[in-house]
Image (cartoon, rainbow, N blue to C red):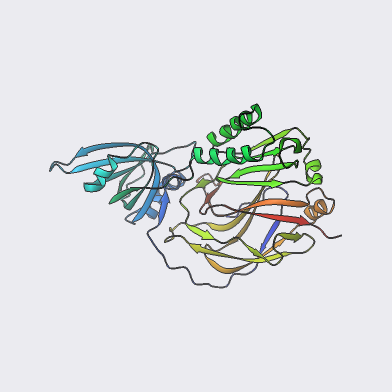
Length: 374
């Protein structure tokens, strides 16, 4: 299954992939509770086959801990795990712990990000109604440093705003923008804010955005501001609901190295290479794997998919524009610097045959100056 290209954007074409050596595994598979939840919602029996009697590490946020003792007096604990990221549809994941792991679990607080090691799942026939995922057990639990919380993202965005806006940190403008940013983060949305030039210390129209927790900013040219209809003292606010699931990173990758760094003459193919490596032992999940490139314009989110393997060294890339996009760039309508966001995604289907995207890497950003030579 391959998802169609969304909106008018850059077209990815992929050179044939040679067989390449896979990075040796470094640890058990790491799975976010939200990923496990979606695997079971997508197909309960298939998910049972994936996880049955396979040791893996499970990450998530604590949603509650109940404790008890065995008949012999040994400690027991049950942890309810919720997804790392906010998620509208939550199916609790219940993990049983014993011994010292149960003692450690008893000290956990709701909302803490944790990893449970050596998790084992034993499948059962599909129940009539799935209320929670049980029959999971683990050997130990550890807390993780939490650098991707909503509060941390809020603080990062507000620090940028206070540094770059033309108004004092205590001004009504900063307070208003704080409310907008908090609203988007609480809803789990990607977003962009386009500021008119008189609102910025730089006196340039500026784009501020966040995708998958990655903050980026870009100063716009006068031509871009005019094309996007950004008035001197206005703010354009756009939200982009996130429909894909973000789990623990399974792969890492270097930003693409292009033959013309930072620039793209759109009248010619953009060529380069990328390196993708495993962050841990891969999960046995069927689906297409792709390098996804996102651009967030005023009111539109454009996505492209470059299909291939999960792991590659010096993987050849060729980017080529369709004729209508090239025409728009030649006219100046879509030319100039733009921020692009790269992620690795796994493409699968839900039982109703609808596409499902699972982000399996952290996001990385790059600025490309897209022009078309006359």
